[in-house]
Amino acid sequence: MGTVWITFATEDNVDGDVDYLAQEISRGGMRTRQHPLFVGEDDKIDRLMPAFLGRPDQSDAWILYASRKTLEGGRLERITTALANSLEKRGAFPVIGVFRELEAGVQAHELPLTDRLAADDPEWRGKLGRALGLDLTKSSDEGLPPYIAKLHPGSGQFKHMFEFRPKMGRWDSFLFAILPEERATVAPEIRPFESEEGFSDDAEWYFQIARTPATPSTSYFVMMREMPSRLAFGQEGNDEVVILNMRPKQ
Image (cartoon, rainbow, N blue to C red; front, side):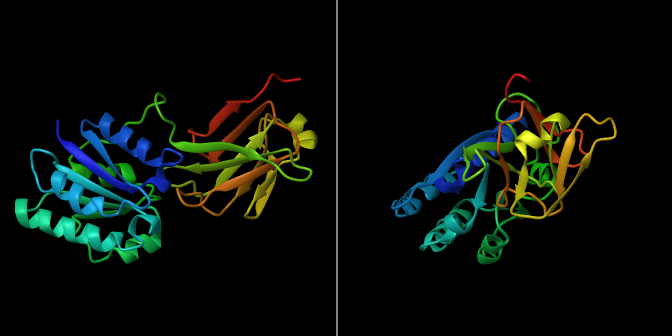
């Protein structure tokens, strides 16, 4: 079993995005080791990265999970130097960039990566799997979920605010749904993008749909006056729409 190291900014793993990515790689048959970049400790890049990148017995592949935070403040220059020295020492091996934001990919265009992919690429499992020589096509309901569903305090007339987004990939059309009989009391509003509303063909759900993609860097927020007993969210028209039971139905 090979080992892949993942370098990332700690701010990008607050909601477990990198933990989820590591979980899926481990399920594919590769050990994962995490290399978090802490604020104020950039000098450790010069020491730690060569220790695992420059030694074939310590790493078989490397992933840079990159956002603007990962590359800011001279970090990109330090990472570039450490990677170049490691490649010169040991020769070529899989070095992969997973870019959380388009700007990060542009910023890191000179890094000598063997593969590049966007974190919001719908085909990320196949592309990353090929880059690592793994089969990542199988998912599981066990372990860390592939999405963020985070409850925040509301404001004004809205008591609750839910944040939704995928950790990898994208929802091209974001769907949020509740029971029709709770529509008036919950009074949901999707933000920050425009949405349309309707009822499912079987009349079991009242839904709102927004057409701007939800991605690892673009969340949807749903404002609610009251908490619904049941809600659903995710990619419109996808069998993997998530249903959560929030409280007993009154």
